[in-house]
Structures are given as structure tokens and as C-alpha cells.
Length: 95
Image 1 (cartoon, rainbow, N blue to C red):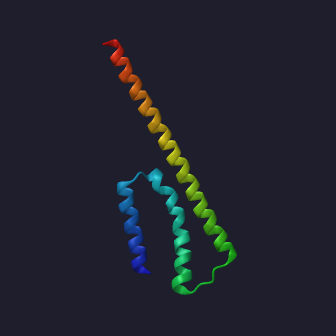
Image 2 (cartoon, rainbow, N blue to C red):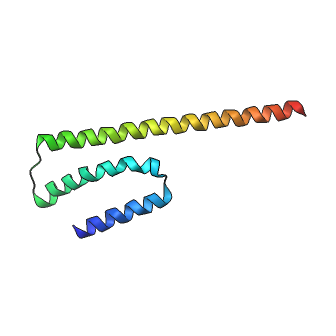
Image 3 (cartoon, one colour):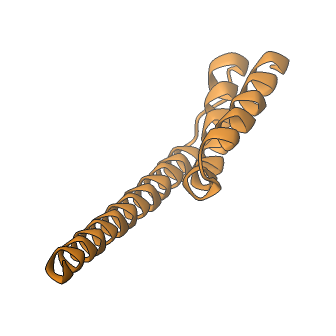
């Protein structure tokens, strides 16, 4: 268990150094899912329907938040690209 905790926190801080916190924050909700799964696998704890429903809701929430942030990021990139092309056209026309 100690190795799992150390590896998990080490990976978390390694990712924070390389990715934006906005992108990583929703994945903190998945720690609960992995903790429950580890309890079931390693400690033979009982998996109840409420635990399954909770895990599914956490995973769906993270998936929705990540798909929306990816869509927003793609939209901002597209807008910046169009603005940059517009600046290029203006400088060409003024020459």
C-alpha cells in the first residue's frame, strides 16, 4: 500500500510540473475510484452497487469535463489561427 501511495503522489506531482492544473484537476476525482478498486482487489472488500454507481458517476464526470475543456481549447486555437490569418491578409493588402 505504501508503494502505491508513493507512486501515485509522485506521478501526480510529475504531471503537475508538465501539464496545466486546469487539465489535471478533474483527475483528482478518480483517486477515489482507484482506492476503492485497490480495496476490492487487494483487501477483498465487498463491491456494493452504490460503490459501482459512484465510480461510474466519477468517471462520467471526468470524461465530460475533459471533453468540454478539449472542445474549448480547440475552439480557442481555431479562433487564434483565424485572427493570425486575418493579420497576415491585412499586412499583405497594405503593402
